[in-house]
Every structure is written in C-alpha cells, then in structure tokens.
Length: 238
Ligand SMILES: NC(=O)c1ccc[n+]([C@@H]2O[C@H](COP(=O)([O-])OP(=O)(O)OC[C@H]3O[C@@H](n4cnc5c(N)ncnc54)[C@H](O)[C@@H]3O)[C@@H](O)[C@H]2O)c1
Image 1 (cartoon, rainbow, N blue to C red):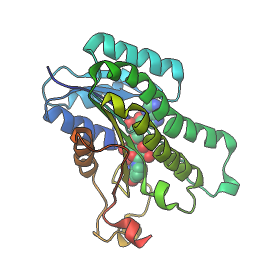
Image 2 (image 1 turned 135 degrees about the vertical axis):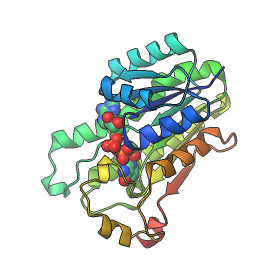
Image 3 (image 1 turned 90 degrees about the vertical axis):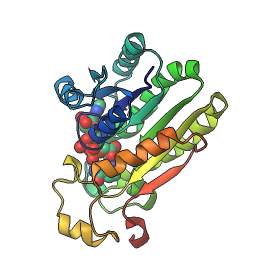
C-alpha cells in the first residue's frame, strides 16, 4: 500500500512541487489548501494514484480537526506531513498592524502546530512516521522588515525540536527545512537581481530544489529534531 502524505499549502509554490515529487515516488498525496479548486489543480497535475484535494484554513482548529479526520477515514493512517502553508506580511515592526501579526502567526506558527497535533493522532498508530515543517533562513538569521515573519519561523524551529523529543519514542521524526530565496509567488514581487547578488550559488532556489530536500528528510530514518538550511549558501553571506 502506498504511503499517505498530507501536504499543507500544496496548491502552489513549494507545496505543489513537493506534492508532485511525492506522487512520482509512489506516495498517495492529500493536498490541503484554503482553496479546494486550487488544491484540485495540483491533484490534477500529479502522477498516477488516487490523490485527494481538500480545503482547510490551517489556522482554524475545527477545520484542521475535521480535515484530518476526513483524510484518515478516507485514506487510512498518515505516514508523512509537510507543513508548507505560509504567508508573509513584510514591513518594519513600527508600521506593522497587530491584526496582521496575529494572522501571520496564526498561519505560520499556530497552523503548523494544529496540523501536527491532528496528524499525530493517526501517526501514533503507524509507529513510523515523519513530519517536515518549512521554516526559513530568516528564522535563523533575522532580516530587516521581517520581524514577525522571522519570529514565526524561529518559533517553528523550537517547536520542531521539542516535538521531535516528545514523539521520538513512537518512531515519529520531526525536522525543519529552512529555505532561502525560492522562486514562487511569495518572492514574485522582489527584485531578482538584487536577491541573486546575495546568494553565493548565484541563483534563486526552485521549488523542486526544496522538494528534493523535503523528500530526503521525510525518508531519512535516523534524522530527527534537525534544522536543514537550503539557501544556496545565503546564510554564509548574511
Ligand atoms: N518562497 C520563498 O522564498 C520562501 C523562503 C523561505 C521559506 N518559505 C516558506 O515556504 C513555505 C511555502 O512558501 P511558497 O514560497 O511556496 O509560498 P506560496 O505563497 O507560493 O504558497 C503558500 C501556500 O500556502 C497556502 N496557504 C496560505 N495560507 C494558508 C492557510 N491559512 N491555510 C492553508 N493554506 C494556506 C497557500 O494557499 C499556498 O498554497 C511557506 O511556509 C514560506 O514561508 C518560502
């Protein structure tokens, strides 16, 4: 039977590339996004298998609970979870509005906590499962104009390490992948030339670069509680 992986934020960008690679490698993928039609677009682009498109706002506890219950009832126990749902609201802290801060923390930090909690109920049955949270290099290094975003990603780092300790005895692994600049809708408004100048490898990352690292972390049976930077060397220059 193929392994079931839930990809939150799978409708586009990194999450879509992850969903595609997992499907190519024979996994059954449950693509979760706020917009079901967009999740379905991803599913329609996947290789073989019976994949699932679901709408869910990961920052809403009841939606997350119902979505994961539905996934388990429909497809069986969850082997993998990838938390790629995320938003940014860039701007200096003094100009940031509290409601934007709450929204950002609600999706990027609370959202991943809620989906992990919901998935663990099923993962406890399998006694071999893997979670990959998507952080950011700015959660490690900080960045001007990204105080709240970097706090959400740094929070995710502490959460990942603590949860890894909590569930290791059940053979459930939890790791965090921290990308640098990846070419997706999230970075579409930024000036590419300026970004590239700061990257030692001299190019932006592609969503597929992230997908390969996610797969590596999902499958590596003896890695847990780790933060892997995937940034073309950006942190060396920061
Ligand atoms: N693109 C980059 O340069 C970059 C760098 C570092 C980290 N990241 C992180 O990688 C992850 C993926 O980013 P991306 O570049 O693919 O962004 P993106 O904007 O292309 O995609 C984000 C996805 O998250 C989903 N999403 C947003 N809010 C949601 C919610 N409340 N509930 C459910 N789904 C929701 C969107 O529908 C979309 O599918 C994010 O966590 C982001 O913070 C991105």
